Image 1 (cartoon, helix red, strand yellow):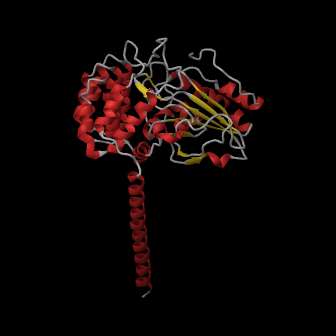
Image 2 (image 1 turned 135 degrees about the vertical axis):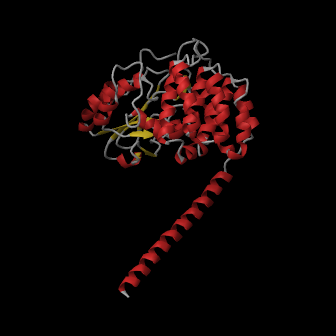
Image 3 (image 1 turned 90 degrees about the vertical axis):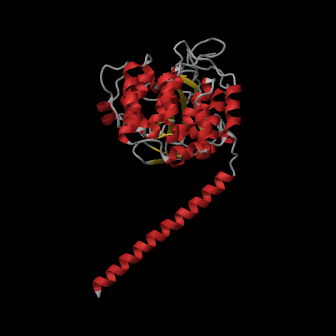
Length: 398
């Protein structure tokens, strides 16, 4: 009798867990329907026309780096430039169009405009659209624009296209662009580890709300957020209110030598920040796989700018959380302009540093104009200690 009662109790708890799971699923499905019905769904053709009609800043000679219209120098000095908004919302709208419109998005891979091809390739990766593999492989092999080939390869990794591995290995050996070779290495690792696009990444793009973009300025209350780090732990900005100053540092990606320099400086100075009660976060606009590559957790890529691997040093010395700002949704509020310009054949955000005081007020917000014009880690600490936030980099683009 006792054994039967225990079995009955176990059965009850099992059924209860199943019932709760079903209820949660129904509620989430209803919430999803409400959210999606409130979002404007744009026709794919309209999105492509909008992207094709925009006058984007040009690329350099090897077609991997954005130059500003006026000076023909790397980066974009005009903080009001709309390139990033057109590109980001183009991707968002294609992702919102979803699986029902995949065939139209695939057709966009053949468009004469390289920006349309790049946006379509990016959307297919975020959608994990296996139907797009053939078109993406063709771009990766044949497109004349380095940043488009690079994006096609990124998307094949996100889709976890195992059938593309031989081709990716071939491109890694033969492509004339070093940046494309590097993206092949990353994509191969992503496919082999089966760490393609996450649901969180998809949801982040679907949920992008342009009314929140660039909504935070110096002296404003900081826009609260909760983001996951590379270990899966969640961090909420408001949890540090009344306790700590907070520094937010948006970096590029693992291929950025300047970002790695900042990481090394932060490793050397992290105890100094901690001693002063300052909480530091680095952030990037990628999904978990790329974020973990940045902190040396998933892959040991070959870097042309480093004589030895970062992996061992990073594993033991990175003591701060590296947050995943998927789709740049949080950063867009602070003006980081996700997908603002291409660097090393990938569209990326402005390098941005934000300082929030103990009262939750933004005291410093600095958006870079290219890859190398923001305060150093040491300067950032000094600003907080002296509470003097006047800063302009001597090489800032005008």
